[in-house]
Structure formats: C-alpha cells, structure tokens
Length: 274
Image 1 (cartoon, rainbow, N blue to C red):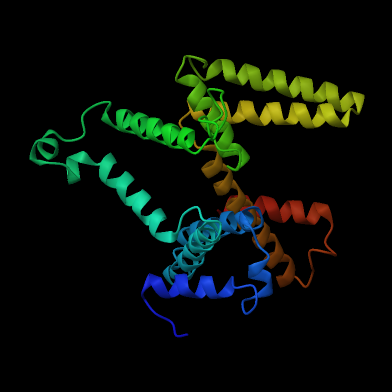
Image 2: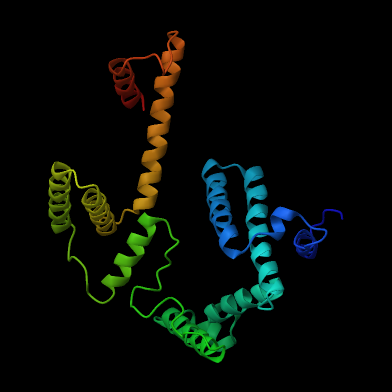
C-alpha cells in the first residue's frame, strides 16, 4: 500500500483498517458515536491552523478531517446504507441546485440569485428529505417535531444558543433592541446571586446558564458573534499570562512561587503593554 493523491487510495486504506481479521483492532471496534468526538476535534484543529496562519498544518489537518468523512462513509457502507461516492454525489447535487445562477441555463444565470430563491431551494430539499425518510419507514421529522429542533444539539453551546435565538427571531420571538437585554442580564445576575446565597448547586448551574444565554442574545443584537468574541478574549488572556510568566522568569521567579499580588502587578503591566 503506497501513498497517493487519489482519494480512492484513502478509501482503500480505511476499508483495510476495518477488516475484522486483518485490520486495526482499534479501528474495527469503532462506531459512529465513538468516532463523532474525533470528527468535531479535527474540525477545530483545522480552524486552529487557519487562525495561526500555518498552511503546512492546515494541509495535514484537512487530511485528518477528510479521513473522518471517509471513516463514517466506510462504516455506513458496511451497514449497507451508503458509500463515500454517495456522499460526494449528495454534496455536488446540493451545490449545483443551490447555485442556479452559476450552473443553471442561460436564463437562470442571467437572472442571478433571485430574492428568496435560497430559502425556496432549501425548502424543496427539506421536502425531498422528508419524503425519503417516509419511504424508508422513518419519522419524517429527522430532527424532531418542534420549530427549534433542527438546530443541531452537538454545536458548541454558545453557537447553539445563537442559532436557537436567530431561529426564534424569525417568527418574532425577539427583543426589539439591545438595551432591554442588559436589564435581563442584570436580572439573571440577581437570580444567580440568590442561588449562591442559598448554596443550591442545581440552581446555581441553571442561573449561570440563563446568564450566559442572555449575554449571547446581547451579542447577537450588537452584531458580535459570541464564539468569536470569546475566542479573542481567550487569546488575549493567554498572551497576557505569558507576559507574566516571562517577566517572572526574567526576575528569577516562577508562576508556582510568585505571590498573587506580584502576578497581578505584572498583569497590569501586560495590559498596558498591549
């Protein structure tokens, strides 16, 4: 077995790894659920390589993510459901359908993407998917029957909060402006204080979640993506903490031995420096 730029070689490798008698024992025992966390992790590593501007890492991480797609497709093929080629056909069909102004006839291309066409196409796809599930004897509502049930549960919590709020807003369930949300956040902080005073662990968790949800809602109204904003703050914290670490090292001290007051003073220096 030799490396190749042909996708068929990767599919062959994955199939060989999954053969019970001669494959890799670890790969053989996996299923969709056990592999799903790795799929999510690889997507994050792709995003990390992009954020760092490391194209060598990006090439490798995209390969790792592609392997995840091949892995899931291989398991589906073993179950007699679909193969990698079906995955490719499904996405190419979707992309062609969703871009009639690029791949359609002369009339469609000259007209461009008409207002409302995107939603119309997605509605048609949803109807087709529903009919296909009915034909297989499955519940036609694959994500549940509620209006918000199509928002994936596996999304990062901040992102899912945003998606839930955006979808509810489509039917008018929304604040008209940002200012009242600040009042809501203060209300949630008050309820969190009450839970803390009572020492009620379950209530503390619940009220803390409510507060975070309200903060995401505020960000949405301010046109600030909560996930991106928190990522920026995370990096800012990392950078400033590294400044503290370096300053301590330069003075012959360490993070473990330094007093909190000393670290706080260096932290303030880091804020002023950047």
